[in-house]
Image (cartoon, rainbow, N blue to C red):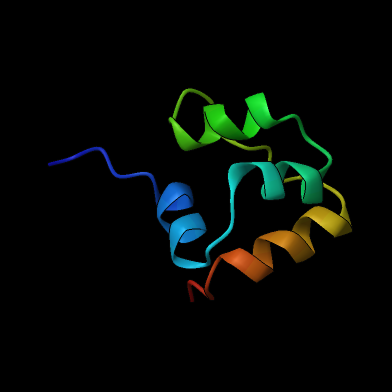
Amino acid sequence: MANLNYLKLVLVEKNKTEKWLADELGKTPCTVSKWSQNTIQPDLKNSTKSQICWELILPNLS
């Protein structure tokens, strides 16, 4: 099975860039790039601003 990165897929579908996500979350583009490459995983215990951003790009998984 291919190693699929959901974050990268959603960014493409929403026509957003890693730079955009980094700016929205207050993270470095390098950090977001590592998330997209599955080198590291994002800390989901971020601020409210981060949570709002995730809700914009990720569909309801329930």
